[in-house]
Length: 331
Image (cartoon, rainbow, N blue to C red; front, side, top):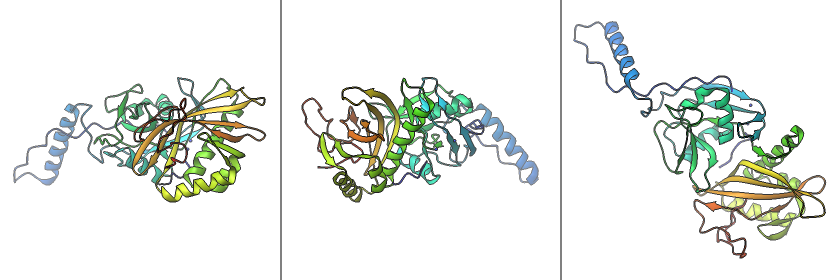
């Protein structure tokens, strides 16, 4: 699957109440059509008002929302994102995670990350009334769901990837990476976000030329050194074997690695991988250095759940049969 280039809110409308719990009684044969329609509409309105806010909304009852732009800035937890656009199209209900992501991809976007959702909801609390998947995951592999029919901006639950809930929709955003760092310089934040999103896009688009532009002459991938051209060939081999793969970065923690003579940027990204209909969750490490900053190291996975045989044991040097990185290499 390909995620198109993705990411800038007009006000969102509140979620309509769920379906009626009773129907108007049938009109007598002598009742005029217009009178019957009015009676039916009145009965439905009364039933809807009595329905509980948590009742499942059938497809078609959650309205579309005009695109709304959110400027660059920080969420309440300090995570920064660049500008992005958020939108909800009609339908997109009762879908599992992968299908919900597919619907957003059709719009040239992706599911909003939890940080994007939070920032959008802070701007318009009406978003809290819409239950939606996000492009964020819990360390245990469950996916983050935000909002609910009776919810607020603080409503947060976790769900298995294959779950489908009738009232759960897909709110879509342009791609905007969450950045956590002590360096609050705006130019640094923008450059770091662009670098990682360019990398994500190159992998998503299976673009070896774009990857070549961000790799150093030699790249250490999962503990093994590759000349740049050799690693690109590994990418291409993998893409041919896994045509439905995609990778999406959620939030990246950025700091300075001073273990070398020349300081390098250390970037740890919470990442969701898709391959063969399965979702893999991991924390992926990148080290960039030199001038200009190039990817020198794609490091060990810090945590891995949701489909691989077992985590990589960094201390013992053991590797899983399915090594998770941007390639999800299969030995």
